[in-house]
Length: 258
Image (cartoon, rainbow, N blue to C red; front, side, top):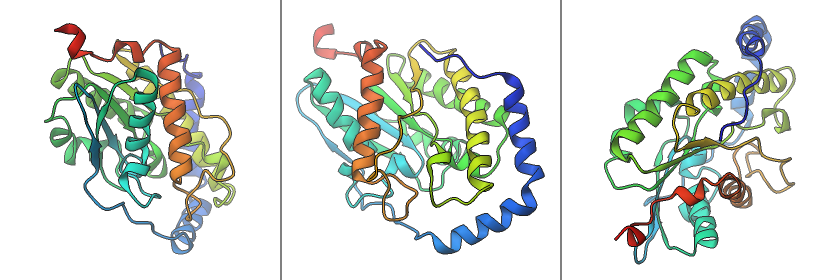
């Protein structure tokens, strides 16, 4: 189910490149934070939908998971994935988004995972890795954290399908100067390899391939987070990929089971 990872050598080199370029990258990052507008999280509640025998969807993770870049939570990734699941399955969806802007995988484990998994869940979409990339976390630490997250999902909800989004394509972020842009892309690729290897150990887990080139209206006003249209495109890609790989067919159907 999981695409074949890239060679190990590239994984090891990426963090070394980031650290070697630190004297250039750190000032670029500081300057970027000064000029990029800080968009808020959308107002709560970060949940909605419902109906008879709904698919219970949880989207957990970082700023994209909770909808930074859109005005209302329903326009974010969770609401859009819910709409796509309904379109493909004909079933209603009850969705929730949990996490926070700026969260790494470690932050989600520490601050959000227990509460997120406390309610019944059929599908979990994980959006993580952008902040782990920007904090130059090691691929070993990221793989360990992703493994723990999926293991805890499996323990709490053994029949839940887990879908993890590919990491952002930093080389397509026009606001990022070089060499920051290319360096972040290189390190994101190394973390993605580790995440794919982590998910390969779980039969109900799958990671999407990288998204196709972003459309002109993909980004929100900060040119960093996805807009409402970007979230729709990302959700469509996630669900279409799950259908193509037969993952969507594994979503529990409680009515049929009865």
